[in-house]
Image (cartoon, rainbow, N blue to C red; front, side, top):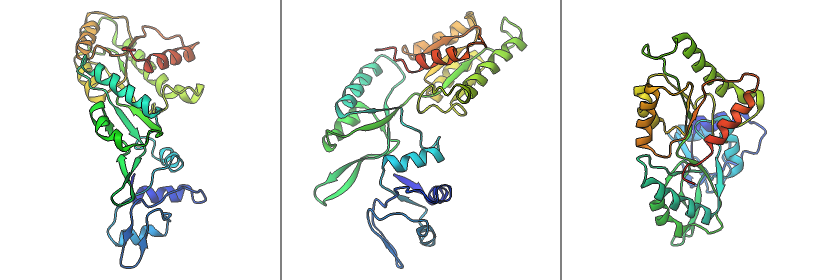
Amino acid sequence: MKLSLEQLERLFERYPNAELDLKYFEKISLKSQKFLTADLVLKGHLDVLRQNRIDEIEVFYTPLMYDFISQEFPELFRKPYGKFGFMEMDRHLEMLEEVNTHSHRKRFIIQVGDVYGIDHSEGKRVTVLGHDEKLNYRKWNTIKRDINKNQQFLYRHSEWGIIVFVNLSLTADEGYVERFKKNMDLISILVSRKKECNEDIAPDFLPTSDVISVTEPEKLLSEYVSSNARLIIIGENLNDSYKKALLDVRRYDKFVRMMVVPALDHRNLDHFIKQVKLVYNSDRWS
């Protein structure tokens, strides 16, 4: 796993007394110093590396070091959604391959952390599947022979984030102020509710960056495609403009997850978040 020197420096500053478990993945030979594979990366090494025009290094992935990195850089190094064994990964990717034949959205798995194998010709460890690498069934079939059958895979889905869809165009039926308030209420609850009820919508969901507002029906499909959002929440009863926009999305992806929330009960917002969590984590093909 590659980390920049700036990221390493921030980790050393934030956790000066912690055992970060940062180790060099490859040997680095400099005129003044040599860092061997599996040597600990120390704060004092960073200046030496900079003087030799090295901006990033590769370190061994371990769950411990990833916990520190994920806490410090939660968007760049997201928490895993879940864990698969070897056969679970095989079955899931095969299923996604079939699902993808029925949708224009092509779903895949994102690897969290590095997966290692052995280069028997050189007798050293190599990265078979890198952190944040996209994995579909075809790619899996080319690399799985090099992976230990006892390997556990931490992963994320290729879909994440929530679109809040409230039509704020002037042609909408209901008054603009009321619609604007619905839009802001939904966004505010999704962004702030975790702090109040300690309910995670998903382990890799970041409320402050994963809630997307779409206020024009003609832009819903393009936003759904570009953002890879996992769920669309519609903040009103469905009229013709909503139906047309949602039909376009469904033509693109027959497995799209949707929720209609025409009114919010502010006395029971925990129930709303639990319903969002339920739909967000469901698969419409299973």
